[in-house]
Length: 172
Image (cartoon, rainbow, N blue to C red; front, side):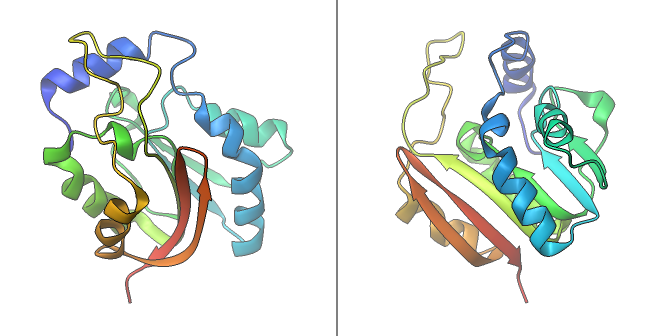
């Protein structure tokens, strides 16, 4: 289990906002480059939301890949599927701490060649209906890296204001 029923209902409610889940639009050019460099024939979008990543990649001229969306708020997408490139954009900081290991296990199961994960380390602008910040885990990269390295090999780490993104490979 990777999400509680209560939090799933909260996420479904948040996704009604058209401005929720748009971070992947910013990262699409990086994902496009990584897909080309790794010759990724498939992309799994873990936490796909309204499939904005797929739309943006198509806008950028990238359409020669299989696309596998996964988001528990959209059960019609089905279960997470293995892919050459697994993207997890603006998701991990939203995970309930109790389920973080299960989510990282899920991700490690589907990363075939590489994964690109982005993590915001500060508070979100949005709040949940109970008043909590939408970023349930607000920890620095020094907290995240050991957890990620339990599941993946680090390929590249890039700091950015209020967070970082990381390219990972499967554990050998």
